[in-house]
Amino acid sequence: MRLLLVLLLTCTRAQPARTADVSIVVRDTVAAIESVTQRAESVGGYVTATRVWREGVTVHASLTIRVPSRELTSTVAAVRRIATRVEGETITLRR
Image (cartoon, rainbow, N blue to C red; front, side, top):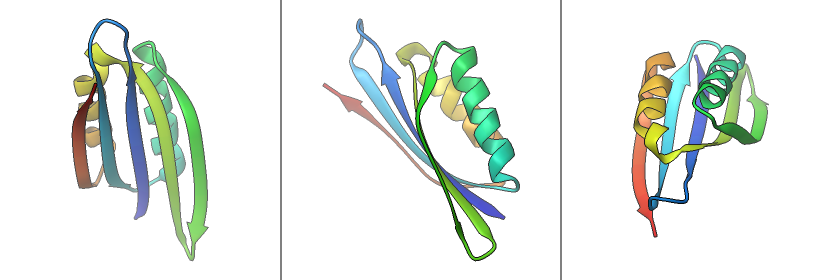
């Protein structure tokens, strides 16, 4: 199992911005990165940062993506669906 850390940031002008921080375990880190990237792009978002590193045989990754505020909840749900286990999730409102 490999660990993928995902930080989702909203880009919005009309609504207060919400931030989601999701930490998940996945079977294939590279495939998970591709899946999250495709999801962000499909809802009008984009990846702002990616970091991948190895610790022993485990591949870790950290992604930062921006999605429209109206898509945050569905994007978090999509990220949860690719996980074999969700380690943590936090959604906050930024003013």
